[in-house]
Image 1 (cartoon, rainbow, N blue to C red):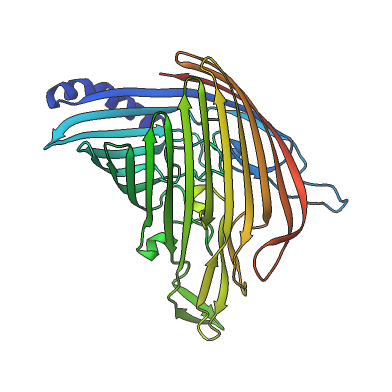
Image 2: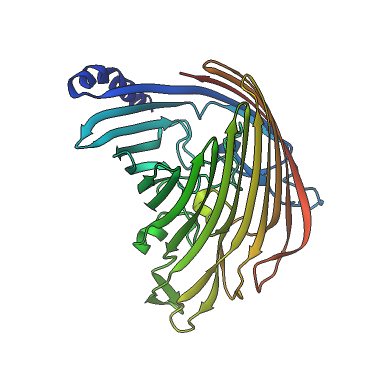
Amino acid sequence: MKTYLVLFVALCMAIPGFAQKKNISYKFYGQVRGDLFYNSRANSETVDGLFYLYPKDHKYDADGKDLNATPNGSFYLLYSRLGLDVTGPMIGKAKSSAKLEVDFRGSGSNWAVLRIRHAYVNLDWGKSAVLVGQTWHPLFGDVSPQMLNLCTGAPFQPFNRSPQIRYRYTSGGGFQLTGSVLWQLQYLSAGPNGKSEEYIKNSCVPEVYVGADYKKNGWIAGAGMEMLSLTPRQQSTVLDNVYKVDERITALSFEAHTKYVGNDWVVAAKTLLASNLTQCSMLGGYAVTDINERTGEQKYTPYRHSMTWVNIVYGKKWKPGIFVGYLKNLGTGKDIVGSTYGVGLDVDQLFTTNIQLSYNLPHWKFGFEYTPSVAWYGDMNAKNGKIENTHSVTNHRILGVMLYMF
């Protein structure tokens, strides 16, 4: 990791001479960030608790004690990062630019190693622009919550950076059209073999997103649609016989969003009807609805979830804010006859409130958040995937953040 860091810094230091010769300008930036957190119980999370999602259900031992009712906490600096913005030269009539940004989040269980966050090039003709590389998923978009928790509103808000080819058209009247095709690398769909890139790789069909926005006088309002088509399996085994199978699960998701920025206020909201968006750090998945008795070939249907959040932040130096998110499992809409694959399919509802206060200075931010989160668990209806006979589980999360930006 140290070798990669030295090479990255050396590259940034070597760029000035190259930039002067090739009509390229650059900006080197980064941050040092520390997160100190406490949870009142065990939770579904990633990065050893830095990326918080929702509380886990009761899990009782032989004496009837809840194994998940155990507090936890830690202090990490894994989301410190380094970045480089490059502009120029002109390519015909297009302005060219690029971004390369890394942090220390790593992947899997390998933390504190460099990981690419953004790596893309962009060609801008004024009204039209084409981006090629890895950056935010369009479902994350220009409307996301302002909060200190690194989950940035997940699992109510899609959170994903993916390799993609994006076309964007902006009219003089404030309208913006976006079309993207995307693949998976760090944020993956769930399936028979857990979370894996193989499902979209074997599908040979990228994710597709189309959306429209209107931007004027501090307002953004828009909507979008996403299609995801996966190949869960390519072979099955029945009575020791192996068969080649042709399987596919295709799902459509829809979202609408709005945001207002004016004076000291930021008010934003987003709602989604999500189908199998596990690659976006959200709850979801799919279930088997039919099985061929001879070959074992399966048909699938996606789970549907409704997610909605609202975020209000006020101020410049002192910035109080509140975030409220609500999620509901809507089931499958078809009878389930086999296995289910996904994330959080045993959760019926999830309600999270985030109360924050930050103190902001040039290059510095100090912040505090309190996040009570309630998840409802119960029994899954084997017919439609809905959760019945529910009970609630609550986690209280406290977060302190120190951030130095340069």
